[in-house]
Length: 121
Image 1 (cartoon, rainbow, N blue to C red):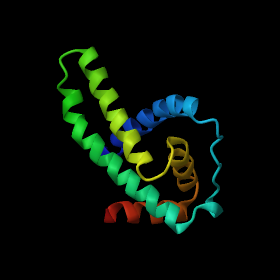
Image 2: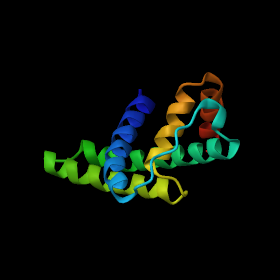
Image 3: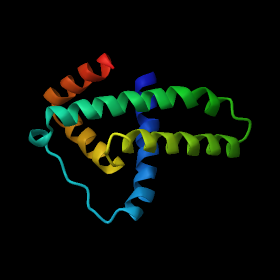
Image 4: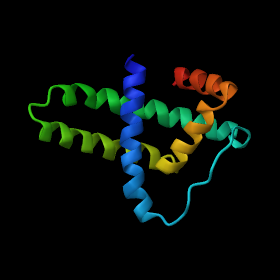
């Protein structure tokens, strides 16, 4: 259950980040199919995903213990900023992360490889 909750939280944070990041970058994201995900991209995805799990762990208790909705919103914004930084420090955009994630989710073999790599992080 924790992984699903964290994944949904990360997806929401990155989806929101995409909007603001897309306004800064005129390039359209490159669509990935299962056959175009290289081993290096899969490794980078797994590293970023593990980093994002760490960010979620860091902020989860703070969000749950927020006294007001405003406090929770401010904590989520800090978490989103840190999540975006984790993605971009690896040279990726949120769009690329989400595109690769979608390709992984659509291919059982890639999903298996990704889960294994994430587990090793």
